[in-house]
Length: 132
Image (tube, rainbow, N blue to C red; front, side, top):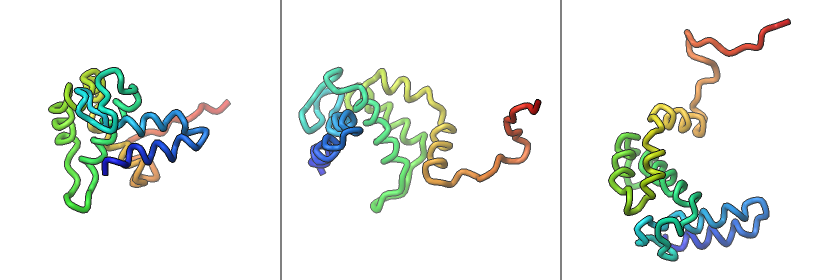
């Protein structure tokens, strides 16, 4: 399990348009307090993209079904991410994350999973361009 960061890094760094993303993958399991892996980076030594991705990865892990447990709610995920602010996660990134409403996360999950309705619900007007 602990090798997935390094393996992902070595795969992505060979793909020209994903080269910069390789460092994010390599560092996304580093913890803000320096107790993460693979290099034990701490604080701002962790690339900002990896600090953001760490929260996104955790949010997805908590709110997705796993073979060993069912998905938890976005509220449960928020509480866990808040609990780990300053240890696992960058407090400044957590602060921004907590400002994003659950409804947006639910909408994004629906779009990603392809469960978004193909048409607007009744009572919702579609934006149209005025005809000339």
